Amino acid sequence: MRASRVSGIMRLTYPNPLCRIGFIVKMYKFKLKPSPKIENIFNNWLDVCRELYNAALQERRDAYKINGTSINYHAQAAQLPEIKALRPDVARVNAQVLQDCLRKLGKAFDAFFRRVKAGEKPGYPRFKSRNRFNSFTFPQAKGAFSIKGDKLHLSKIGKVKILQHRPIEGEIKTCTIIKQADGWFACFAVEENQSRWFPKTGRVAGVDLNVSNFATLSTGEVIDNPRYLKEAERDLKIAQRKVSKKKKGGKNRKKAVALLAKKHLKVANQRKDFHHKLSLQLIREFDTTIFEDLNIKGLLKNHHLAKAISDVAWGSFLSIHFGKAESAGREMLKVAPHFTTQECSRCGNRVKMSLAIREYRCIVCGLVLPRDHNSALTVKGRAFPAARVKDTSPDDPRTYRATDPEAVCL
Ligand SMILES: [Zn+2]
Image (cartoon, rainbow, N blue to C red; front, side):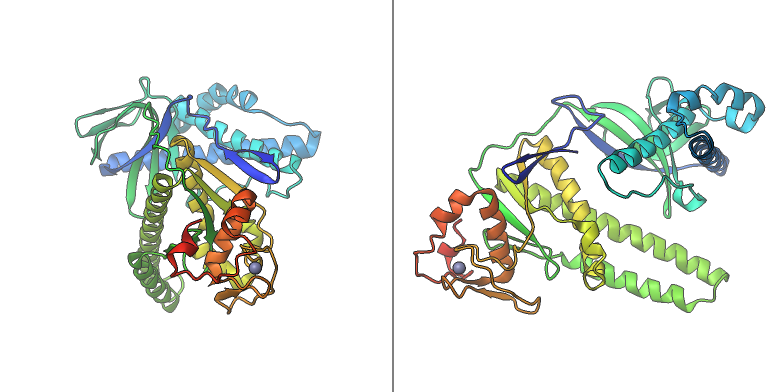
């Protein structure tokens, strides 16, 4: 992510390393139906890759601790032939898959050092347990993998049945085999020359992300979490309770845990789906969307809000939305988040408000608006101060209400 500050407003562009200009990278995920023999190979490869990842991490740690030096990807990849000569199980894994593991570790270190340099306090790259290492990647299509009919051919593994529910359009770049609670999947990164550019609408929206619903727009529109998502979340709570009732280490607990993992996945998928749909709606309707530059990690430290915030998953929504906005040629802005709930969107006066008060009343200019609507207007006003002066002149003695069509014409 690159960000540049223009008069206090952050403009975001997201260069995708996989992506050439004018191309977008799409992910296609299909279920696999491996035979027991193939499943065994998948599990073996996961073990080998995890062991390699952890050993390479250990080597980097030791080199740094003992000699104060750092080892890069190339130095580690150069050792692979030697390791393969000693370990037949490693030699059985496709060479590019092994290199990809080392590259992933390299990326983890790059990200770590980048954050240290930026003055943050990131965690040191961690060793991965079985639960945390669930995929391996063929980084190139050439000769390594191909789809023929309903079979996925994988180099050094063989044929696997694939349930390809939609055709792949574009050039396949990578193939990742993923182990999930509900089975095995193949995920393909595909480069597609189809940047969709939407026609200009001339409309701008400030967006207030809040805990009581999902978001409120500066147009006054309230976007609530969809009902199916609420139902799924209730379901999740019941499954969670079942796990805690079962005896630790027992067979029934194992079953309950597997069920819970499956339900978690379902909620995650439904939430993602909702985020994609909402993002598309915003992109269709507005040329520019403006958000508060929220420090989500900081907010999560507030225990009163943490649960609600991680439930609505703003971080995930924002990253989906940025990606979509970029490939659709739309603008996405972030503004300073301070006092957006307290500040009057019309005259800029600040009133202290507790979370319980749902209506904003300005004692200076008489503005009355639902609290979140006022915040969304303030967010918009920070990016476009000229619009604020014009649209919500403090000289105008009128009191706006959300139900008033003129109040929402900003
Ligand atoms: Zn006011």
